[in-house]
Image (cartoon, rainbow, N blue to C red; front, side, top):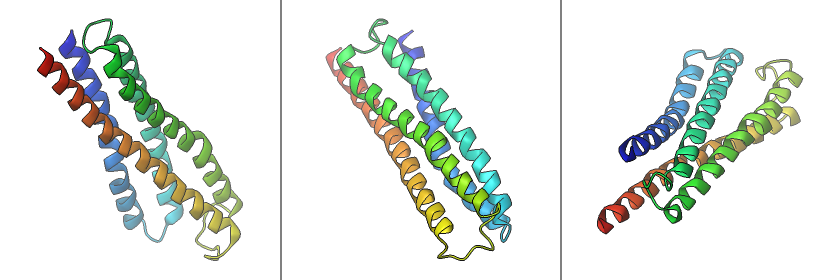
Length: 166
């Protein structure tokens, strides 16, 4: 049972971190391939971002629940699961912020611009606002990725401590 719990947590994290790592590559390829049709590229990237967020929330919830039950199943002690659970909650909160806070505001700006920014001046307030939101979105996704990498190190530390005590 211990191996199953650990494996499922690692699988959830690997899926989430892998998706976070792959997303900018996919976005870059999409915009490069569909240039100059940034509207279509943006729509595709937006759909993929939504999928990334749902995958992240599903993986985060699964990992959080498994960490919560792991002390009862004697996988790890409760004091060792607190920090990883906190990091997961932060990662999930950032995901919620991006999906339901930032992304809808970016979509609103895009609609205000007539569906595409291709005819909007680079210094237009709506475009500047969109670009600012895009930068914030990038930082938020980077924070989620950093949290995922931190989780991998935290689990390795927990495992090292657990093995040295056995």
